[in-house]
Image: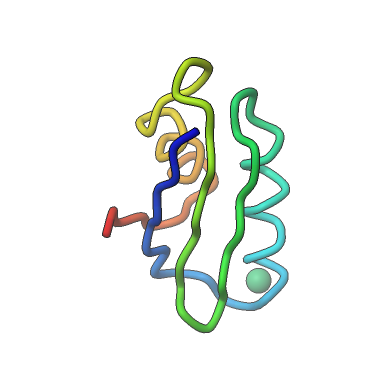
Length: 70
Ligand SMILES: [Cu+2]
């Protein structure tokens, strides 16, 4: 398993944070997603044999979130 942390700069409320987590956890290979609204951070644990970092970021961008890898 690998873990990455992104900064998501345009979250508007805690339910945005929750819906990011649900969306990411729908992706095959994502084990856990956890977004902290106050810190504007999403931490994702994933299986690198099933999904890569690029696909996870692409998913967030599709949802119109601004993502920076930190
Ligand atoms: Cu919101």
